[in-house]
Length: 126
Image (cartoon, rainbow, N blue to C red; front, top):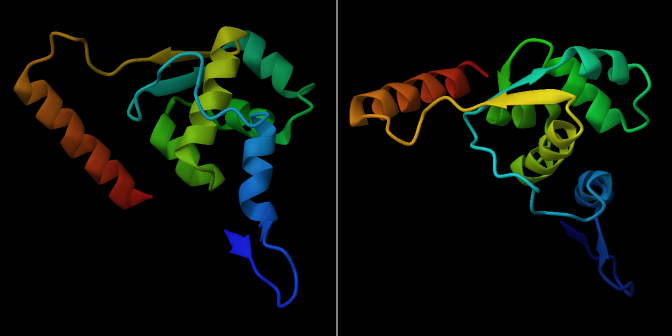
C-alpha cells in the first residue's frame, strides 16, 4: 500500500513493509513448501520459542505446537503467504519445525480431489 499525502513523496505503508522486514526482504523460501503442507514445531522448536527474538518466528513456533497448514498459519497471523513460507523455511532449516507433505508425487486424482475438499472446508472454517 502506498500513502500519498499532498506535497509528499509516496512512501510505503508500515503494514506491508514490516512483514518483509521479518524476512530481511526475502520473498523466496530456501525450500518450496506447499500451502497445504502441515507444519509442526519440534521439541527443539518448543524450547527455542522462549528465546526467539523475532516475534513472528515465535508466533509460528507457538501456533505449530499443533500441526497446521501453511495457509492456516498465514491466515491466523494475518501475514502474506510468501512471508510465512520464508519464515517456515528458515525454521525448517534450523530443525525447529518439521513440514509434512500431504500428498506424494504419485497421488491419485481422487486423493488430490479429497485434499482440495478438505483445504476448502478448512478455509471456510477460518
